[in-house]
Length: 534
Image (cartoon, rainbow, N blue to C red; front, side, top):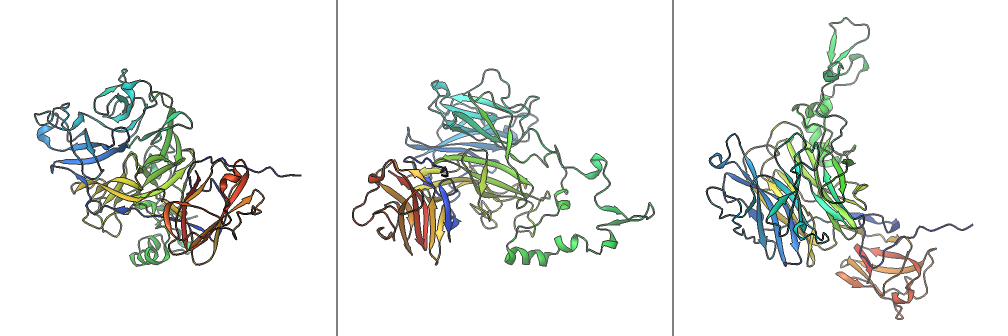
């Protein structure tokens, strides 16, 4: 009886080794994230006025025009220029750059502000995420935006279209395309594999619509326990005394113990649920990541939750911005540490802050994160423009030359803490180098799943400056192919994005085209990021 092999198709596409899509087995190999390096001159984009904050929305490198384009929100708090009854207003603004670092604000002449149209505003009321869609045959819809405006009875998100990214027209019906849409961002991508627009938003159907107290549904107060057989007036706060356990306060609110745990044990900090109830509001439960799809950018499916907090997370996620990169959905997940009380960075328990975590998926539905949940872009030091919070823009990952650009919003203070500096920063990584497969000072081996060779040459993205790497090509049953075994492989001990893999005796992968094979990477003190058959 023969066993049917699960053959993975890779063609000539770059195979990132972030997940196990092409990986079958490993030995003494671990995944290690790379940390983006922040630009020394951050913030690269900041407000010109103390009464106006800027909030980045979308940034892209336009291959057609050979320039970076940014759409951002101008958060106007200057009461002299606000409509009657408004305490603030969101306006859409536009900027361009040749290198993505030095930005120009073109004078568009569209929106009158402060008595003049001599500005870079393109949207008088609202904010949104923008994609460029050259597949759409209608030239008036090459740019698409889901714009968020003031609440209405039927949602607050509207579809808008443009031929140049500057002059916009709403979908003629004037109705929200997302009924009962909630607060939060609405980033969109077009997935060519399924031929649909994919939106990541907050869900509309929830386990609980608001933060709940036990008394809201008829339960007794959570702080009161009644002892069996006691009088009606005999209540205790905390655990029943006869059990013999200390109260929760002995564990949760002991600062010395908490400090020791955070510094040395490296476990996730436990959050007592009572602390989460300090602020009781309508948005206690809706911060999840949901997915909706559309064929035409107008009619959207009911959002389904695809990422929810688990036992290693705080109770809330804020937003998810996504890039389709090398066959993967790459997302930056805003993990929301929300104690609900307004404090400033540096307090023993910071009030409401975001951390960015890297998450990835093959279909946008089933998402993974690294086991230790590392922070992708850390907050800056106290007092820095990004010392309070960081959040990503859409698209969060842009390949530009030999590097990856990550643009992000930085806040000097915490969520909902007024004042402070806001700006847009940028960090970078070498291309394809988001997560490495690493071997330390013991020999490690990574074996791929079987696939059919469709290229002439094998190339890898690797950093082996401190170690060595060899590649073996084997049959589907694991037996080395003659001429391509590890003993024939030429050692790789350098650093590069496109390093050719070679074997002694002149064996070429082109000889194996059409054959079912596996790869084995033998590694010692090396970091492997990707491979491809070109």
